[in-house]
Image (cartoon, rainbow, N blue to C red; front, side):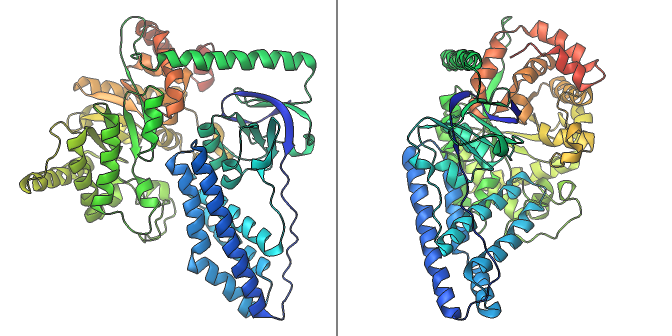
Length: 568
């Protein structure tokens, strides 16, 4: 048995399809005919672009990936067409008289090093995109064939060092799951596996050394375990568990149109996190009661210039119309610091997570902020809009942001443009200072949404991207639970509601405690909604209040987890 990280739930039993990348020995060998080498590079580049377009078309026709995931291939095409990137390769060939493959690798290594040095998950994943594109480019230069996962013709579990976005998008119905030697829950392959609804275990140490092509393998992506060459008894046991899990997922579907009410009649909202308008479909398909976090930064990241008011309006309107009367919470632009945009120069900082980002950037660059607020207000006429400001640390920051909102609202009304009359304006609570002062913030904000991902790392002074201190990233630490309770109590004191949009909101064990602490709204990935509803409907709020009181009285995260170990 090998251990890894459960990245996409499920159980698979099949033969190993070992994906082994072709060996490409690239040296800095010189070339005599420079122009011939440039021509070779240009031909390989055209084939690379053609390959990417074919993969995108195949993935689009399959219809299982979201717009956001399909857009990865648009980013790959942009990279392959980037004149700075391709120009650097041509220049290296011409000035250093080296072969095209070496020039391409040199350019790629520089870009990969740049992106991998960033602290932000999203931008670290861009390094994987660069590796994907340049691997294909180098293979086309050398004339090496890349394995086609779409050609698998028998039930298989793919085993690989890692899967690129291109690899994952080509997985067909015979790919019953995959296991990789590296990766985490935020990697492209993990995200795509959840969209494809196939089991995946990543970060499996020793998988490449132990697994052989054709071996029988059990992939337990509920526990994050891999069993190679299982016994007949193990196969029987895991087949039973697989059937039980399928029955469980099927049974959850009956909860799709049910309200999220505890056994003693307490109702909460279970809503979804989205990044693009199309993602709203997944929320509705899984019985979501609204959108609790619309990450608007993807509108900015996927463009080569700031999106216009009209472009933003169209996107926001699409989500609001799709959700009907269900509430949609939109987070204003959360970018800056470590999230750099090529068209928005920002000075480098020693600690970008604590720097010039989110509401701090928006209040400094109000022309960007005003454009977004105008688009949101125009869209508010088409649904139930709730706007929240990220990274709020002081009451004056919130008041200043709210003032800009009020000014743009007044302008639109004066222009005769319809705006919603029931727009709530709230804030994310992700800075400990805001949680401690929640009772005062609740006098000026309409609602809170707790961003646990940042709240935990700021409270524990532990960078969640650092493996050395990852043990300190403890959602169940009593100190975190007390900050959450302080925030909820502060909101309720002023008659306001409090939600949560961090990863914690979708974890079954956490749902029980959060319910007991009084959380009103739980926002999570769409695929987690029905599981969370089952937990809510199987409990009584009174019992969970008793559990929550015990949890916040604990000394350690381990003690808290022991309290909820039987909640599934």
